[in-house]
Structures are given as structure tokens and as C-alpha cells.
Amino acid sequence: MIHERAARRLLLCCKENGGLFIKFGQSIAVQSSLLPPPFRKELSVLYDNAPSVAVSEIVPVIERGFPGRTLDDLFVDFSPEAVASASVAQVHTARLRSDPSQVVAVKVQKPEIKLQIGWDLFAFRACAHLIEYAFDVPIMWSVDEIERRLREELDFEREAGNSELAGRDLDTLADRWLRRVVYIPKVFWEATSREVLTTEWVDGTSLVHPQKLATEGWSNKEIMQQMVALFAFQIFVAGNVHGDPHPGNLLIRQNPNNSYWREPQLVLLDHGLYVRESRLFRRQYAEFWRSAMIGNKQSMANIAESWGISDAGMFSSMVSLKPPILGGHHRAPTDSDKGESKRAYEQQMEVKRRTIAALRESSSLPPELVFVTRNMNIVRANNQSLGTPVNRVQILGQYAALGLRRMLIDEALSSDRRYSGARGVLPSRDTLLSRVVGVVAGEWSYVTFRLALWVAGAGMAVYGVWARIWSAVTGIPRIKDLDGVMDEAMRRAMEKKLGYQIDTSLLYA
Image 1 (spheres, one colour):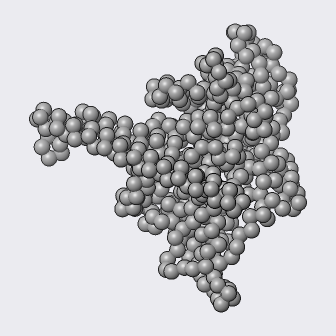
Image 2 (cartoon, one colour):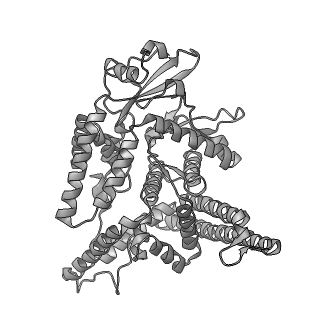
Image 3 (tube, rainbow, N blue to C red):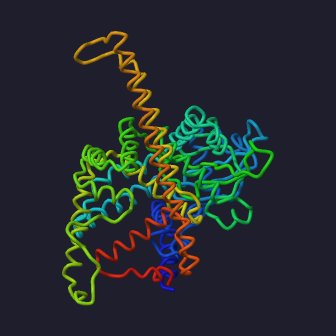
């Protein structure tokens, strides 16, 4: 029970220190595939049940954001206890004084956060310096960007703007299905300040409680289809990406647009951390996915190189969480050479060397990539926590294909097509021809991308049939999904290349 004891001690440490330590605990809790289960079980309370402060301590925070007005001037029936609490704020229910029929969620910044975050970030920077010095792992390049993003989360007016932008993206860019199954609560600006955010209250069940979702009869497959589709849409189509989609920021409720049958609707909360993708990055990232699906290694290498990464293999491994392909010929150790630990050590040193080199080169990576990868990894962990009911890669690929098609066609129809650097304004005939060629190229890209996705999906379906038969014959549990296949492939590759066996049962000790 060593893992349970360690997890409880870590939880106590995070609760006692608060602030960024709560975020640290949340980050550990979401890594369900990398850490023993007790860590997720114990630390998941930090998503929405971190220590809160008394209402008497937050009233001054509220009132200083609205000079000349008291708490009673803004709200009625303000709840004496917090209904949720996380790293920088806690949430109370209330009704608007201006509209007593409107139930709202009032998110209030904890009074000690402004002072504490400076010390927490100082400790974070000091630890990063120490790690870089002691282990020769270059991580300081990321510290400034992380600090900037964390400080942005303290501005609730910015969060309100992020929330409304996410809603407009859904209304104007998303397909009808996605608009219907995803909801973002309304912001009430008259009761919002830099330290207070007031939004529509929405009843629902948090993804922190998967057993409760099952008891209520919700389909994990439908929930994950909506979740993966939402964030794939943000990454590849909208370009405004939620940076912290952990289970505490996602609710499930009955879809109010459907009065005929039971259908979940995903409610997205906490828009404090958002990443604005440049159009260039979004196109390159979609093209990277297309190149990976159709097997165009040269295109993948070109894109990675444009981001300052010369080791495309290691870069791909870091993004996809797959093991790197080491140089030279490798084989599983036999009885005759098990004592030759030198080769295993050399292989581990090669992985370390290439990882360090990739991290050094990462200083020139697009800043969006770090947070987009974080988003995708958290969604992957959410999928695994619900039993991996959907094929994330298929859904991500579909939206990557859609986003790339839209960008290519937009470029083809752009007024820029009328101009040439060498020839100036083009004749109408040349302009029309250029646009037709651009549209055809966009459609061809989309068709080949979707065809590659179909082939990959068919391959997984064949694998699924074969796995069922194999499981029935041998009694060995089958791996049902692509994430599971990747995890098993990683384990086998690490055992083969590093020369030792990974006993996964230790994670459940």
C-alpha cells in the first residue's frame, strides 16, 4: 500500500500549501496512464474540492471590484459555503439582484492568491533551475511562458472574454451537431470584475465522478465523442484552445435541445487558460497530421524542421507519447547476453541524449504546440479514465481534415490570388484558374486525408475482430482501442530496447 500512503501525503502537502500546489496536484491526478491508480483516486479531489476560505474573507474581494456597492447590492441568496474550490478561486451560488430569477455561479479569487503566486512562481523557477543544473535537462526555456499563462488566469475579465469567444466559435464555425451537444454558460458582465466572475449556473454531473455518470445512465462513448470533437474543433478549426480540460472543468447534463430521448450535453467550464493559435501554426499542425496519416515522412520532417526540430523521430515521440526508434540494430536480450548491461545502459543514454537535444531545440517551437499537446494529453487521460470508449485519433483526424480543407479553400478564394509578386495584378483568367486549382487542391487534400482515416479505421476494425477471436481462444484480455495498442506497443518496445521487463502490476501495489 506504499502508493496509497505516498498519494495521501502528497494530497496533504498540496492542500496545506494551496495555490499552485493545487495545480501541481491536478496535473498529477490527470496522468492516469503514467502513475499508479491511488494517485488519481486521492488527488482527484483537487479538481473541485480543494480547501476553501470562509465567506467573510471573500466578501472584501467582491466588494473592492465594485466600488460603492456591497455584496447585497449585487446578489441575493449568496451561499454561505463554497460549492466548489480549486487552485485560485472558489465558487458560490447566488441570484442576481437585478434579476432574482437568474441563478448564477459566482467565482471569487481567493484573497491570498495574489501574494502567494509570486512566491509559488519563485519556487517553481528555482526548482526548474535546480533540475536543469543537476540533471542537465534544459527546461528553463519554458518557464517564462508558463509563468505568463498562470498570471493570466488571475484576470477573470480575460476569462470572461475567453468564454464568450469560445461560444462565438461554436455558433459561427461548428457544425450543427457540435453546436447542439456542447454548451458554454453565459457571462453576466454587470457582476464581473478582475477578481469576480459571474456566469449562469448549470446543474450537471462532473466527470470527476465517473461512477455517478454510470449510475445516471450516461453513455461513456457519447460523452467522449462530444469531448474529443469539441477540442479537436478548437485545435484544427477555431484556433482558440482550452488549455486545462481536466475532469473538474467538464459537466454532463440532459441536453435541453432534446425532449424525446436521453442525450448528454457537455458543459465546458473554466476558460482562464486559452491558447490563440496562429493561422500558420494551425495549418502546419493539420498538415503534420495529414502527413502522418498518409505516411509522408518527408513532409513531417519538413514541418518539424521549420519548428527548429532536426530529430523528427524524437519530436514525433514526444508529441505522440510513443517510444523513440533508437539507432542501429536492436534485439531482445537472450540468455547468453543478459549480463551485458553495458548495451542497455548505452541505449538509455542515447534516449537521454536525444531527449535533452530535443528539449534544447524546443526553445524555438511555436508556443502554441506546448499547450495544444497538453490539451490532447489531458483529453487522452480523460478517455482512458472512462474506459477508452472512442478512437481519439479518428475524431482528431476528421477535424484536422476539415480544418485543413477550410484553410486551403479560404486561401484559394482570397483576394490575394489577384496579385503576383512578379507580375502584379493578374488578368481575370489567370486569377480564376489559380482559384480553381487552389479549390481542387483543397478538396483533394480533404479526400485523401479522409481516405487514409477510413483505411486506418478499417484496420482497427479488423484488428478488433482478430483480437476478439484471439481472446476467446487464449483467454488473454484484448486491447480494445488505439490508445491501448499504443500503450502496449510502448511497453513492449521499452522492454526490448532497454533490456528489462516492466512489471505493470507494481503500479497497483
